[in-house]
Amino acid sequence: MWTPQRQGQLRAEAMEWLSARTRDGLDALTSDAIAEFAFEGERFRLMDPQRGIRKPAAFSSALSIRTVWRPEGADRPYEDDIGNDGRLRYKWRGTDPDHAENRALRAAMDSGQPLIWFWGVGHALYQAIFPIYVVHEERPLNQFVIATEGLQLALPTRSPMEEVMRRYLRAETMRRLHQPVFRGMVMRAYEQSCAVCGLRHSELLDAAHIVEDRHELGVAAVRNGLALCKIHHAAFDTGILGVRPDLLVQIREDILKETDGPMLEHGLKALNDQRLRVLPRSRREWPDLDLLAVRYERFNAS
Image (cartoon, rainbow, N blue to C red; front, side, top):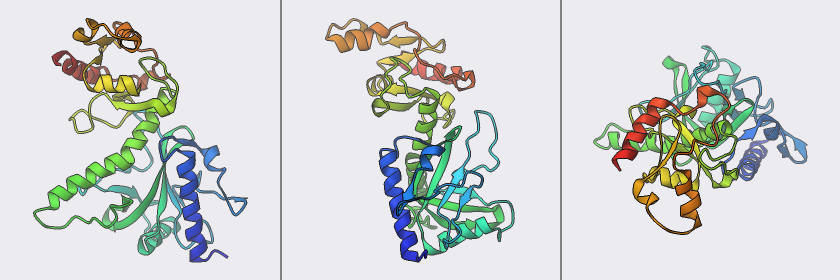
């Protein structure tokens, strides 16, 4: 029997299992890998492969939600995004507030239950974001308001601090949800390899933005990203390494004149005028040339 206590135990074990399988949210999981979760010795589905909202039949509320992946330029059937208050929105299933899936999310909101958000970053590949909470419902817009852990009680108020709180919530939402999703998409596109040197150890790789989210041209898309090892990410961010719009790597002039050990010689100086070693298979996901031009202008000015 699925008592509230047993449902809570499953939620806790599922999130502990996901934390271990994703290295605390660092790695994306295939749908087949997600299907391997077992509770009390039996397989238990955490994600509904056909629907956006997963509510096990005997549960009192939803267990997880899912956002499907679409290739660059393709529209999702529902568009989930950050609202003006800095929190995420998740669209209803259809337009009927009494649809069973919408009722399941509403029940999770009313009971304060933690959920898992499986966000598609590739074909049958998902970034698991957890725990998340349904904190409000905007019925005129057919959507729920979602917050990550620790932010579900931080409600914007009509006060002089409202704008500060809104900016804080948006920044935290970007850090806790959009950044892992961005990483998952970039790692998938670059096949877990550094674009500059080809290193293939995911624990040593970052998803670097070409231009920052806060930039007017900044977008959370693969074309605004590069998979870089931690050395080359740091070099990129500090202006030691640049990437021209023709995809050639450039090393800052003063660094080329330095004499030092093998890391400087082979890890940086030898890369000058070399083309990026790894690019996505789909040209639609290659680095955006206009964004590279903006970033390279900054490199030249450093």
